[in-house]
Image (cartoon, rainbow, N blue to C red):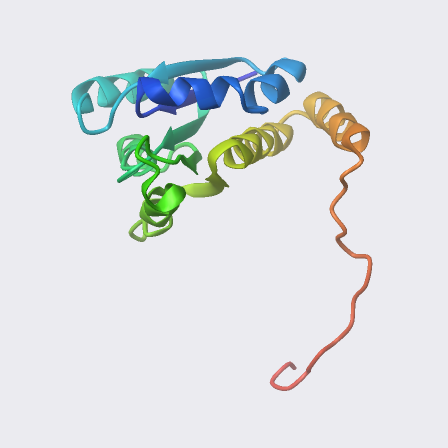
Length: 174
């Protein structure tokens, strides 16, 4: 199975990653993953080299978590040229300014053609990013899909899709 690349923008982000559900979810499902701290601003050449090498090997999904300007997910999406999904997680900056909203807005304002999946802010965002990565992996592996479905069933939190359906308006529908 492919390796999920988790890239953090700063060493200060390691603690929030460790205390989130992301490691537990990926390890619990035996998903291979690596974590690297590479700043998009301070280590642009290292980020470029790492992403190209990762895509050339077996990494097909990137999770990028960053605060403040949060350029990391967009930089990875640009470097990988849309070849792989990039999941962005906004983190609160150490000064607590805007509670991560600045980072979130940076991620959702990507230009057309440089897509970043935005999973949320902080620990809930990291958990969502792990689940999105697993959803993507499940698309190409029936065995993993069954394992992932068992995890979802065990969590007791199933999406309520298809429970109720009604036509609100048919105006303009042919």
